[in-house]
Image 1 (cartoon, helix red, strand yellow):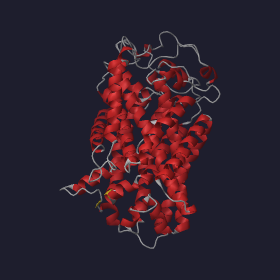
Image 2: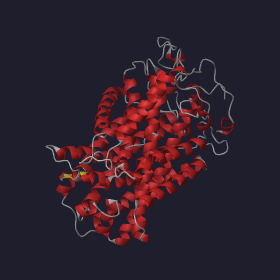
Image 3: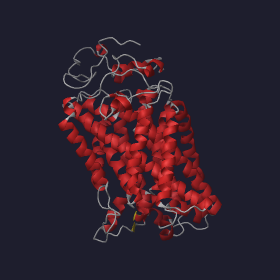
Image 4: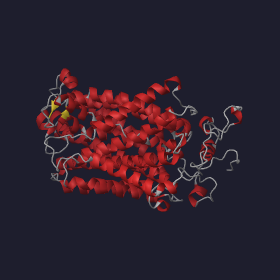
Length: 543
């Protein structure tokens, strides 16, 4: 496929231009003469490849995902049967039922606004780089710097969310194995289970996008049917249910804090359960280069994955909380997973084990999809030369059409982030907080730049006159949670329960800043253009 010189877009940096809004395009001229990929109608074969070329890239990844598969990847990463189950204990300790049920709906509403704002930008620029690429495209000055910092926060968030998902999956798997085989739940057993799970996810992603597509589609249905089964069992089987009033309004505070207003503070901390669960839906953007009709399918995948999760997740959390038999005993269960104990107490040993098995499989699917999104972001960031060793991580296997090296980079980095769990009891909570802060800063930075750029031209999927209200509300919410989730979570504060979120985020921010000041500002020009480079073997086989 060839692109005319008028359609090509040079790399970002000094003298850069972006079609549709920069000074390289005279908007006073006939719009019909302006090449604007954001509004290119999707229909004929090759349209996606032409749009990608206009954005500066040659098609290298295999474009095999349908709109449903795109949704399924993000829905699988959000995974209400993963995040809401593994982090349920956080809200049981901090906030109680109020944080679990009404908190879920409140946070879900705010996250939907973030998703809507992100989706609008995604429709205009459907690239695998997504967030950092959007930042470079929308910044009116210092484009490379915006791309650099947003990209590093995105990379941190992706690594942390993969770590948290698979560590949570290991926790759930250990609870299941403890019930079915009698194996003792220990720190080392959980860590070894984590290693097995994350290596399996690396292998599955290495085999090719067709396998990922199949498993993602299965995962979406597994989640929906699984939630329905769990809700039905917990509604019908138990002889006793918690009073409805307590399910919605009861507040619990086992954080150790006792100052005036400590209960309210606990409720706010408990919102981490919901906020962490609602992460990873940027995956729909990261797999845009593998999705048909990406300018429409990717933004729809972002928003629909969140909305479906809000609805299905509410029914799931209501049913679990309604089925609580002994709050304190289940919160402090030896299984280290309160929902597992609730399943057993409410429905009996065998049926409870079956419900937990549903969660184990769902969480395995979730981690697999997270590695998929993580590796695509790392691949795109490396394609633009931003990661150390980019020449290694940007390579695409011509046979499978997958960025194999980036997949294993993500596996290793996520494993490193989980190592502190061997001595720190709040490691999982810290990993979830790091994921939330890293990802959400990256989520709203392009939204902020889009709102400050009057020349932004939306794609075929957009919010119209609601764009500004939705976008600014999303930005304010992310500012609130960025502060909230670095605060202490347990009193008294000790090294064994220290919330090291602020340390991890600070280290990455400082490292990104120092590397920018000392080196990157001299050579990193933002997203590069590969469309004019000689085709790689992967590009020759992509289709």
